[in-house]
Image 1 (tube, rainbow, N blue to C red):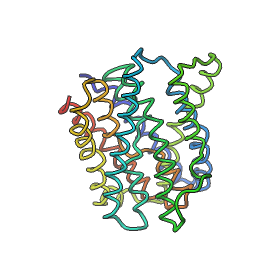
Image 2 (cartoon, helix red, strand yellow):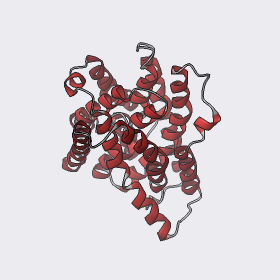
Image 3 (cartoon, rainbow, N blue to C red):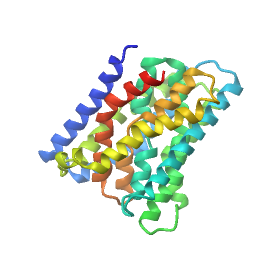
Image 4 (cartoon, rainbow, N blue to C red):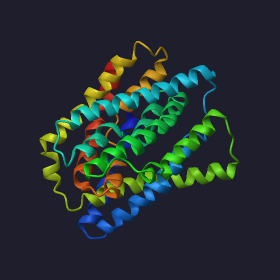
Length: 304
């Protein structure tokens, strides 16, 4: 199987990270840029990407199979957050909430979808598209609740849960279930706006890394341990837990790809929004993204 498309995509991500880092080191991008751009990324660009994921062509599957696929995606994220919560118990108190995000909020849209598109085409892309619903439901409920607990707040407020990405995820579910067809102008709008998500997110991460020593990031043993759990241990657990129940090879590959993705770029802007130091998340995102160039193709080759 040709993995060149996957490697090219991941190389593009890395180049954008380097550009953001270089611009921050030179003073072209400031911390204020990272904070403002993170708001734009979360509330506009990412929300458009979620809706856009269900607006394209989708495979014709019986309703029973569609609901089974959606239930599997929900179960996958329950497992991811369960693993992350267990691991966070062994972490330092101030970084434990971010560790939960880094081990569970995976880069499904911007790494997972290109991977399955190269390997299996439209059906797998559709499965990863609907995974944006449980992704955002868990991130903006349980994930936000953990971030608030880390700051001494009593759980998640309703205002924290009802966010634009969550609204977009619920809207995408309605569009998916009722097979709503949008006018071309609407689909073009969401497609155009969502196209800015990847470059902006990578530039934000790079900008937050401006004051960070890359030498420290790549010599941090803790980050390698997190990368091992995120990129190898978790996808292997997902594979062996779900293999007895999933008889559709495309769906099984899709859930393994989700579990094998690097830490999501959204972890940094969300950390900024809730008052956390983005250095830890940005370093981990960069390291897992770089290592994923090797681990993801190797893992898929061994398992499939």
